[in-house]
Length: 218
Image (cartoon, rainbow, N blue to C red; front, side, top):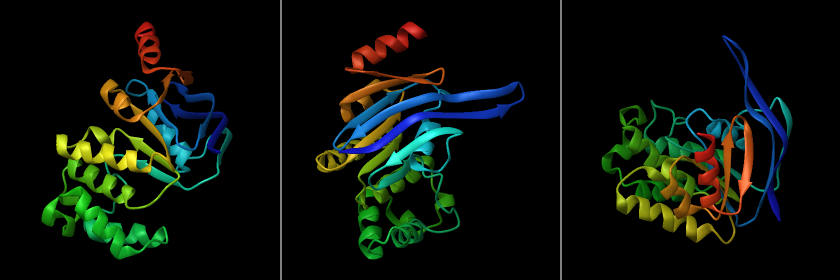
């Protein structure tokens, strides 16, 4: 089953020197149970691509089709309300998603392991604590597709192991689209790969091929 399909997606932003095309007629499909790792340098458009897939931003041209439940981009928790506590943010999201608020809040608290900070305003968190909370909250809700923006590189070895285990537990019924520039992260989580550069997306059969293409273009 195809859960995500992008067809001819284009996205551009106006800059002081004119229009900058970030995504240039991108097309791909994600079947159930596929983990796609998208490599790309800083400013290549990886986070923009995730926002378009999530529906946070609309493409200027082309179509994004979704057949399942898609997560928000799991990153460094920029979407949290800083004045609310971690617990209050989790409860708010659970209500929006139609989930049991107590179960979601407890799962996120246990997963994030940020201690009493869970009950404190998110604006007092470090970026790493926000990332832990964002990941725990996302794992508390069953999605057909998880969108991941570098978050798994956060935390100590114990936390990163928990992240890998959480994804593996969902791999038989969920897909992952992960953007990163880290080779190790790609190897740990993904089974198919692509390179985003100069607005175009090229897919490869192996991580090695994607890395060689990136090196050749450097």
